[in-house]
Length: 135
Image 1 (spheres, rainbow, N blue to C red):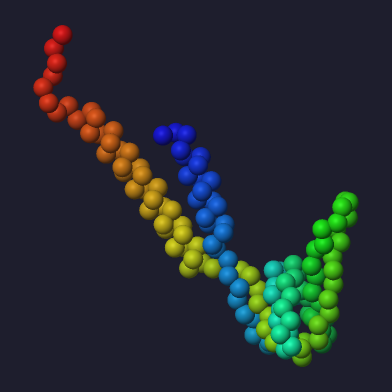
Image 2 (image 1 turned 45 degrees about the horizontal axis):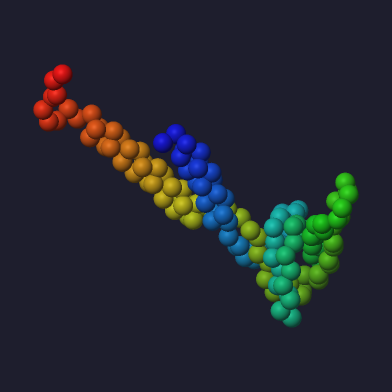
């Protein structure tokens, strides 16, 4: 039973990490409120869609940055400037607490059920029922 606990732990962390984020649309009036937004999806009025690692609002345009995979010690970012009037929708990825609670509650319920099941199995073996055997 001890060898199963690390597997349960890793599986629980994996589940919590995969289902806990969601894209939330940002109203146009709040674009410039934060100096920088991370994990952003931008859709233009012409229907083009972009995914950025982070964006900044500078004046009347939005600057999007996406990390490029290049060999070497220095990081390289592709940059795209989009006029704010061309932005149809801007969404930011963030924690979805409802989904996190559902997944966490499900994992917790499974762990409790497994613990109670193991406890009842151990208790039935040592219940002392039946007739004792004499040597």
